[in-house]
Length: 291
Image (cartoon, rainbow, N blue to C red):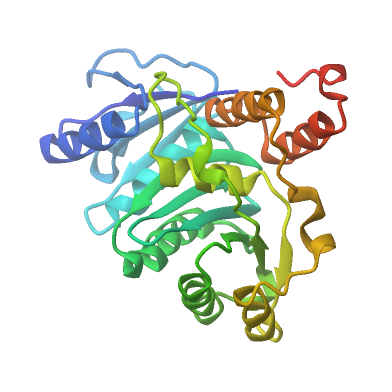
């Protein structure tokens, strides 16, 4: 169930920054006036500043979650929390999935939280990838009594870039809660996927989304150099990527696009989507109600 977002603040600087980011992310919200009765709507989040918390005397804190912002807080992490509350609607989370399409000029990144689509980015500076991942990780790990599990799905199209990124992942994150998968990204760039506003998402993000819908070969900090060297020289065994075999089938392509677009809308979980795609390849697609 999606969450209603309300903004209650007299801090103009906070409101300006918040409004700018929420509009960019296409997150709809309603502005409340201080002094007026605050609606107690189930599954809602009220955004305000820590200094203004005393204004919430008439708020049903069971129905409405208050998400305060303090000046010393990291604003980017605060926005991640708002986005997670809007799209996922839970207090604590268990798993983050980052699907990555390394290109020659740009990098596509798609993020899933507890099996549902959270956000996507086109990254023009590869050095910023770790910072972006850490922003999501630290924001969603804060206050969480359990460690977040991290899964990375890397496209294997440009192996020198992929190898460098994987090395950074192993260096920056706890290996105990980490999984890294190498994914066949054949023909991922051919899919044109539209978002909720019917606008085509950037091609690198679309490719990363398709990568997220595929199974892959798991690598570890112990075996990755050997594995990546093999993949760089195209010594990949066919069975390792059996589920990712690409079919030149227009009907399956169209169904894949349909599934991907429903993932973006939040109508489908990632795991259910992967199952649907396998069913489509086995001609059982119509037997599964995916919405």
